[in-house]
Length: 126
Image (cartoon, rainbow, N blue to C red; front, side, top):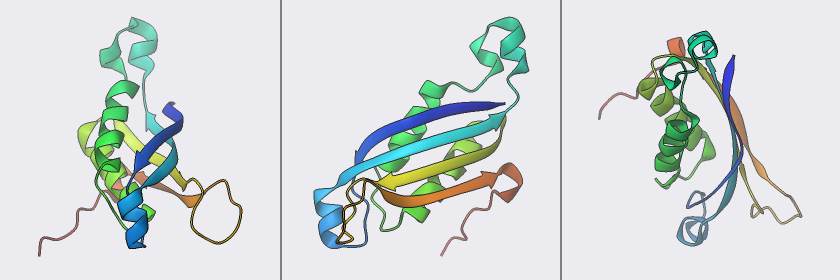
């Protein structure tokens, strides 16, 4: 069972080049959260599932923080979702930058990753 957000298009300031972070670009996200929503199936109550509206708010907040690498953004999103939603067993995410600066026509370039709850590792404080 999965809660999904598909083809979510957000404007953000991610990129290695200073111009990418200054100007910003559009990014396309696809997200799936593994969870058991059988309670919601039987009760028709939101409390038995993960609200995709709340998922969107978490994603939007993390996307608003500039990063050089999409790998870093995706990891932050996965950690935030797993922390916010105890019923989430895993998060699968794809982030594509539209029109990336690679010197060729391309509709999107990016990353895809998954993080399970037991993979949840937070960086050490420095």
